[in-house]
Image 1 (tube, helix red, strand yellow):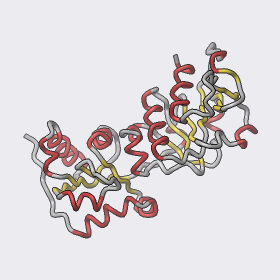
Image 2: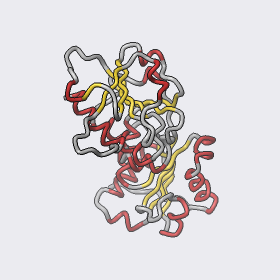
Image 3: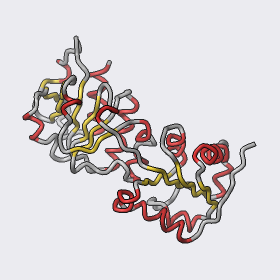
Image 4: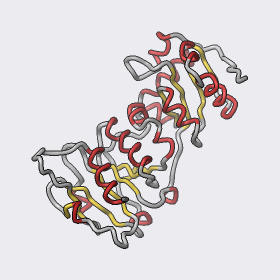
Length: 259
């Protein structure tokens, strides 16, 4: 039987965890906040080290939850705190917390960690979209992501929630330019709204690994990428809609590129 060894949760402990809602403190301490059972399960199944777990006792009634918490504690020596709803709301960034919040150490990656097909998030500012794009990249088996300047931080709690924990399974780089090593053996594909090769005409024969760029929700892919060798690709809009959600567009394009 798995046993959770609980520690006393002081106001100072809660305050330190709550600070991780702020990017400044996440950057300074190289830590992140995980909210909800599913993202925590994904983190537990990855190489990230979980430092603390704050949970409401009602959550232990859910099958497998006590085993999950005890397993993380045994693996990472995580400190576990059983707290009430009021205290949990102090820590969580959610209006209605899901009953469990954890802190974990951030990871750093190098270009060599990114393999195969990649996704470029170009000034994606909406954390929900960014999180969903991480989840899509995970689903399609991509080897990593590039986040350009102006893209929401990957450690934003809303990005982590939006990714449903997929962020813990993919290497990524925050960059202003694409490292040459990542462009050398890949075809840069720019997703354009009103120009480029119709995706229905795309030929997959002898296709090299690719780096697919998905642009800002309002402005699209930045013009600076046009200076690099690339291919423009567009989705036809027979219905006449002005634009398509960035994550939806990425999923449609990846389906065509990979299948």
